[in-house]
Image (cartoon, rainbow, N blue to C red; front, side):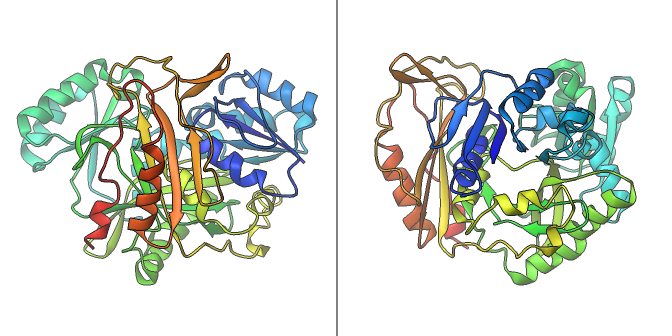
Length: 429
């Protein structure tokens, strides 16, 4: 079977690595892919929003399985586009419909959905430029610091700001509604701040049943000690120590099942991954956000921990027979991911720097996933803000971290930057 993975980041390469281990997969096409090299994989220079070209590729190459990695094509309706083509009725597609992708595409939609279905989440209000003064008044009279402001639309993981003072929150609201995040910030969602520890829960669903994947925790801020600006993610750990059976029972009963039942009851076709960004508030889970795809860089840790063949579960989505599949098993070991970024990220940065130290030391429990790289002549060079994800698996969090940090220290490019404290908060639990 031939597969197409749409995307060019570390998440997509980690998924390619995992499904490439399956005997069912003979070829994997990555569109557009990156500078990484994996068995069975071939890059195709087609962008994630070039729907017509992607459909032609599927037909020309006889592709049967399509996995949509990033949120932009999902929110843009690529699944609906492919399903509308009668020549592609055979396709197995991992990804929700455009309506389902609104769980991530609009934070306002997601919050209203949670309210409709009794899913625990923080109190919220939404404001536009026309209701700016009302929004400022709401900050002053209804909320307490720290404040949580979210751009309603997609902002590449950077659309959430948490000002510590009222003055900063008011200034931020003005900037966001004034175009700071472009159209993504045309509506701003203000949430009450929740206090607790974050974690990420992932499921694969066919719209009726679901299959749990390994849990993870990611690290959003650029600097050690969770300082500096929000990024797309600087590292991850899987599993999360505090996510025990009792907590997961609450997550399934209060969040996962009501979400899937809610989608079904509203007639929304959802066959793909759901990422639940959760906050553990004194032992109770609250939803911070939904994503309509796997997280990045959590995927780079999660894929190492999945036992067995993920492809069979993906193929069960089309006929909605996921409930007949055996649950996916997890390795008991811990996986950690350290992300190397370009100097200056998440703001301005230079690219095109040659990368050395990538050769060797790649095993089942140590992988270097490319995020923002490209092949240039005889070398691999940087081409994005987040460049590489070094993922390692071992018996404990500390052992997995030691393995990942030891490997990343041998990688060099001009301006290489990474956090040195990934997972340290979990060691204190």
